[in-house]
Image (cartoon, rainbow, N blue to C red; front, side, top):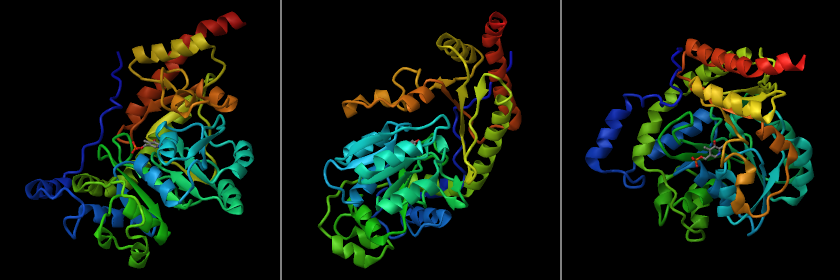
Length: 395
Ligand SMILES: *Cc1c(COP(=O)(O)O)cnc(C)c1O
C-alpha cells in the first residue's frame, strides 16, 4: 500500500533560534519590556520592514490583534462590523469580545466575498473585517473602493495569508490594519502569537497602550512618541503582549518565508492541476491580481449526492488522507451555523451551499512534489472508486 505523506508535522524551528532561546532561558528575560533590546521589538521592526508597513505590534494571538484593531477604531458599543460568513470562529468571537455585533456577508463558490451582498450590507456597518480565509483573497480593489467611498475602515484578517500579494501589494497592507497569526498551523510557527501592522501612528499608539504598554513602557516603541503622550492613562490595558521567547522563535523563520511561500504555491498548483482533471472535483481559480501563499488546498465536489460525499470522505480516510468538508464535519468552527454564541443566525444560502461541498486538505510547504502527487493521485482514485457505480447506473 502507498505510504501517505505526513501532513501534520510542523517544520523544525531553524537552528539559529537556539542561541537567542538559550540566552532567554539563562537570563529569565521573558517579558518584552524588561530590556531595551527585546526580541519582540526586533521582530516588530523586521516584520514591518518585510511587509512594507510603517509600524507593527506583536501580540498574543491574531484574535488579540483583531480585538485590538476594533478597539483602536473607537467604535461605539454594539457597532455593526461586516465579516465574511466563511471564516474561522475566532473572527466573530473577536467582534463580540470588542462589544460589537458581527454582520455576516455571503461568500461564493470560490470562497471569496460575494460583492453584491457586501455592497448591500455595507451602508449599515461601521467597520469591515476581510478574512482572507485559507489565503483566498477577495476582490480587494472593489472592496476598498466601496469602503473608501463610504468612509468605512477595513481591517484585514491575514492570519492565514502571510506572503499573499494582491496587485503586487502585500495582503495585510491594503486595509487600515492587517492582522496575522503565529499559531502552529500558520506559515510562521510560535505555537501561539500574532501581530498587527498599520501605517497610522495614532492608531498604532492606541493599540500599543491597550496591548499592555502600561505606565511608560510605550517609550520602548519607536512609534511617534507624541501620539503616545496624548493617550497616556486614557485607555484600558488589555494585556495581550507577546513574550520574548515566542519572538525569538519567530525571528529566524522570517528568512524562511519566501521559500515557504514559493514551495507552498508550487505544491498547491501541482495538486490543483491534477484534481481539476477529475470530472467530480473543481478547484476554483484565484482572482487575476492575486499571488497565493497556500499551505492547504480547498476544492468543491461536483454533482455528488450526500451519501457519495460521505463515501468519498470515508474512502479518503481509509487511504490515509483527511478530507474535511467544512459544512459536513461535526461542529466545524468554519461553518457559520456553529457560531451559536451569536444568537439568531441569518440564513446565508450561498455560503451554506458552498460549505456543504467545499473540501479542505492540508498541503504543507515542506512536502516534495512526489509526495504531493501521491496525495493528488490518491484523491482522484478514491473519487473514481466512489463514483464509478453511479456513472454506470446513470447511463
Ligand atoms: C488562525 C486564524 C485566526 C485566529 O488566529 P489565532 O492566532 O489562533 O487567534 C483568525 N482568522 C483566520 C482566517 C485564521 O486562519
